[in-house]
Length: 295
Length: 209
Image 1: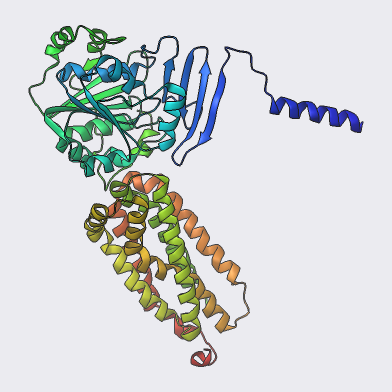
Image 2: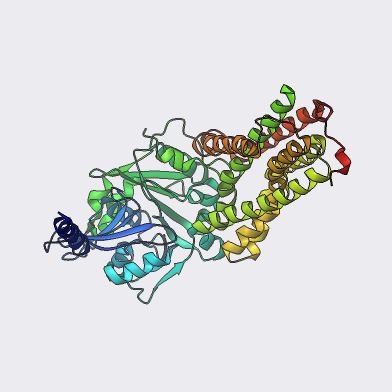
């Protein structure tokens, strides 16, 4: 009886110590905690993903190792739609590194653009380098800092500021407020644009659009067709019109790497409709509560 | 006697709730200036722990020297007024600090202590003070030190949940803080008005020290 129990236990221990994994199946390459997140890196076939927080979390960054150029997520493709509004952009600031897919597209296809990336979590940088071949080429820079603190302390101005720092179950609330967006506006060049990636389905979306409207003259939304992602594009210039977008897309050759800009144009909605949504401020900021509420 | 216990429970529940509500709100007060990292929570919790410790020592000591609720209530009036004023000075203070201190850990620790040292230390005096009075009172009753801590902790539970799950979604943080200050002031004034000390007979109150 005893020996049987010992054998069974030993078998369980062996299973636990050496989990069987057929090659090509979903594999966990890394799992650990930083001071900000629980981070998992998984690979399924040739697709490798960095996942923040819970496994079921929708916000992750993935790269297809066989086709590293392809935008696996709709939101990244939509964010590059920002170039339809400012095709001449020379300086871009990206808040939120993830696996470094966006900087890689800049490196390959927009080498003339100076990209300043800001990532709060030093472990994200380390893992991006280790698992996603992230590197900082000449012309790009990376700062490990809180996005708001970085923009506040550095007086540099950008043609585009990209905000990609949100999870589907947590957002850094201090980067959603009217005061923060006013700071972003100060750090934009004349006619500069800000692009923010969020989910369309929560009440937070309405509040965020309403908040953008209090700071910027023009607010557009690209609404995802295959995903729940929405991209807010805002500009201080009131005369920006989406009518000119196909023209701009043509000027850019219709594509940035694997991203078809013409396909993105159709997702642009002007003006986005929001109903009685609160404006988020440093004082009134239920961003994370709103994120949990479906519209 | 009922009134005495009623006042004790009122003080314990309301200050237990307010202190935790302020702790939750601290993250909203700090994050615009020092970021939203776990460092902020480290500063918030460690600052509050220091303030609690100071309050416990002071409360225990004072209740032995002067085991009178009116003395405690006078401190609580001061603490309430401080809380009411927090929204008026928190923004310029945090901006001043974050402009000068680059390290967010140090910056948020300084800000937390300047804002909360006085009011939270006074709030933390409530439980040990009441335990001290009960001890001096030497009345045989079910109101033990454990009961005092239990009631105060129930208040803290309510304050934490109400703030994190509801209040932040309903009101601006500045208004919640002022509201908490007004509740504290109201409770302190009721305590003073009821003149509870006259209902408690403490043998040789001034000799206890």
